[in-house]
Each structure stands twice: as C-alpha cells, then as structure tokens.
Amino acid sequence: MKPVGPIPAGYETIAGELAIGGKRASELVAEAGRTPLFVYSRAHLDARVAELRAALPTRVGLNYAVKANPHLAVIGHMAPLVDGFDIASSGELALCVAVGIDPRRISFAGPGKRDDELEAAIAAGVTLNCESEGEGARAVAIGQRLGKAPRIAIRVNPSFEMKGSGMKMGGGAKQFGVDAERVPDLARHLIGEGAEWRGLHIFTGSQTLSADAIIEAQGNVLELAAELADAIGHGLPKLNMGGGLGIPYFPGDTPVDLARVGAALSERVAELPPVLADTELCIELGRYLVGEAGVYLTRIIDRKVSHGVTYLVTDGGLHHQLAASGNFGTVVRRNYPSAIATRYGAEATEEVNIVGCLCTPLDRLADNAAMPRAEVGDLVAVFCAGAYGATASPSAFLGHGPAAELLV
Ligand SMILES: *Cc1c(COP(=O)(O)O)cnc(C)c1O
Image (cartoon, rainbow, N blue to C red; front, side, top):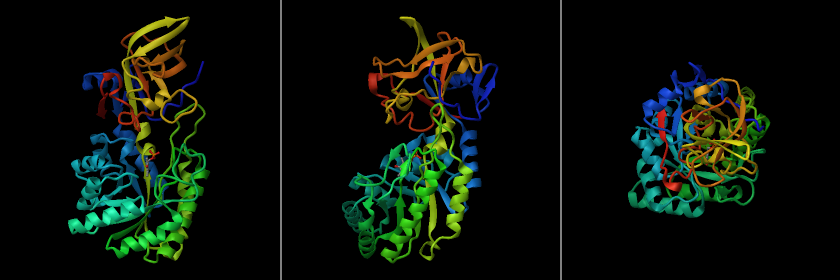
C-alpha cells in the first residue's frame, strides 16, 4: 500500500459524496455536463487570501501569479481580492484585461518576451520585469516608437536561492533575470533612456514548505534590494519579493507555518533601512493561492484486474493532471491526495491503481492506494488541482481534449 497525500481542509461530505461549494460531486458533473472536470472553490480562494492578509504585514501587498491558474472566472474572482497580477505572456495579459483588471496593477515577467508582447504591455501601461539588457533595449526602442515611457522594473538573478525549494529560480547561471552585479548599471541606463523606473523583482524559488527557508530568503531579498537601491541611487518605488510558499501534495508534507513567516516579515519590515523606507512591497503567489482550491473529477470507465492488481481506469489522466501523474518535475512518483468522490469518507477496503485513459504507462493518478470499493461510473477526485493542472498539462495529447472547468 502506498499512502496518498493529505486532502486539503475545507471539503465536506454530503449524502456520502465529496461536496464543493455546497454541491455534491455528481451534481457538479451534471452542471458541467461532462467529465473530466476541474472544480475551483470560491470559498477556498477567499479563505486563503484572508489567512494571508491576517498573517502578512499590511505594508506587504499580495500578487497573484496568473500562470498557476488562468481560468477566466478564477482571475475574475481574484481581481478584487489581491493587489496585483503577475503575468508571463501577452495571452495572460489579454485574460486580465478581459476581466477588467487595470493594467497598472499588472507586472510581466518571463525570459523571452517578443516585441509584440512588449508593445502590448507598454501600450497598456503594464510594468515589465526586465530580464536582460537586450530586452531593456528593445523595450526602450518600442516605447520611443509608441511615444510612451515603458514602466520598467528589473528582475534580479540573485546569488542565493530559496533552500528546499521545489523549483530553483535563483543562484548561479540562470535564464531568468539580470545578474545582481549588473543591475545598477542597467537600471541607471534605463532611467537615463526615459523609462519609468518601477524597481526590482527578486524571485528565489517555488513550492517551499519550510518557514525557515522562506524567512531566510525574504531576509536575503530585502538585504539585496537595499544594496542595489543604494548602488542605483534613484530610490526604489517598488520591490516584488517573490513568493515560494508551497502546499502539501504528498504524504508527510506539512503546511507552511504562515504565522511564523508573517511575524518574521513584520519584524523585518519594521526595521527596513532608509533606502527602502518608501518602497512599496509585495509578494507574488501562484499555487499557494489557488492550488488547494481545485479538485479534478474524473469518471471510472473500467475496472479490471491484471495479475492480481486492480486497475480503476478513468476518463481523465495526465493530459489534464500532468503533475499528479508524476511527470511534471518530480523525481520519484508519489500519490497526490485522491479519493473516490462518490463514496467519500467510506472505509477503504481494497488497494487499487487509479490510471488515466491514455495509451502510456506514465498515465497514473494513484498507485497502490487504499480506497473504498468503486465501480464503473463512480467519480475519482484528485485534490490540489487548482494550480498547474488544466493549462500545465498536454491536453492535446491523444486527442481527448481539455477538461471542463467550473468555479463554484
Ligand atoms: C511561476 C512563478 C510564480 C508562482 O509560483 P508558485 O509556486 O505557483 O507560487 C511566481 N513568480 C514568478 C516569477 C514565477 O515565474
């Protein structure tokens, strides 16, 4: 038997079924008209933002990293809840604009921004988190052509990274950002060329559960920002401190101690050096905001036994949930939190492999998992599906097409 990850708090049982937003899984599927289906919970999104607001110093703003879940209804729901939006393409810009977000609340990071993307962002008044000298030069030239000063921050490639981070995004050679020692020259150059100086973006890692690692990284970020601001000599309008807060996906994972992170940040913020006294601060989060708010529901199409092993074959799979299949940046495959949604809370009586419908042995949703006996027609729930699910999976692979999505 292989355990499954911890099911996030806040999900209920109604009439023996998993319920989200007060509706049973089978009702949600009926509403959507089909499986597989991603369900995103407004109540979870609201609760997570409220927890963050309560823990973080009021001085520190909250940005949503749209790439975690760019479903239009999710972006629209987040719009009044958070302060800013971090986008990574002009496609994400269009989604934010479509739900009426003021482009001045948006910043755009990403190492390969095309000229047409720079143009769209500059024209709209989005802040560019500039990733290189070359990109800075292109932004300035496009701004001159448009007769509009580009709003530019510089993304810094720091010499440190967030310890224990699931995805390392700083430290040593990287395709992201500008090496810290070259930032002051570039900043002065861009300001001299007429850019509207917006400050620094320092992102050090992702998916960290350790409060200590987050606290240390935030301390390092504030120190580096102060040094760079001194060297630039123009003040620092804004500092995006990155994010990195992770969520528990696997057995043994424990949630970030948010109270400790918030308390440490409050202390830091209370004793900022004079050069950062007027700097607007924010953190940017993706999965921490939306990951636990999403559930992937897929229907059991077949139940079969091979060499004594029971397989529950579903109509979903890695084409929607690449991360749960263990093929999105994981070394050892472990089970995401999962359950039989239509027999939720029932006692586990058998060990099963839950697999997807694709013709590849990589398409696994849960291995050797203890579950109540499920039949063809039952629904499987995979939790922690709110981030890097629908759009981070190869939905065109094998031609089954994308899953439905529902915000409730
Ligand atoms: C992807 C990304 C994020 C969001 O990461 P999460 O792990 O989802 O919080 C934030 N900032 C930047 C620059 C990113 O590239």
